[in-house]
Image (cartoon, rainbow, N blue to C red):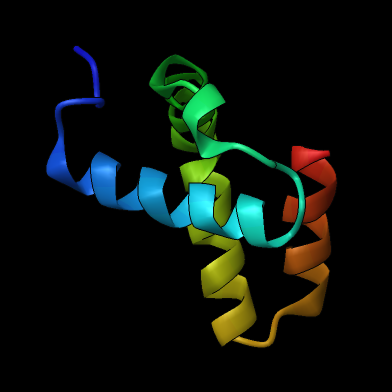
Length: 74
């Protein structure tokens, strides 16, 4: 199932494109397709458990656990 039809995906895509444009990573939003963003969404989905773990460790100020999660992702 594709996330492209999901309204949350559209909002996220637009926000990311605007950030990439502002930072100079993109110069023309018309030539950066949704197919490329779909690949990013898939990658982000795989990282979500690690991001959740990092958020929990950060909230608990558990620096060693934050480092463990960071190293596992890298």
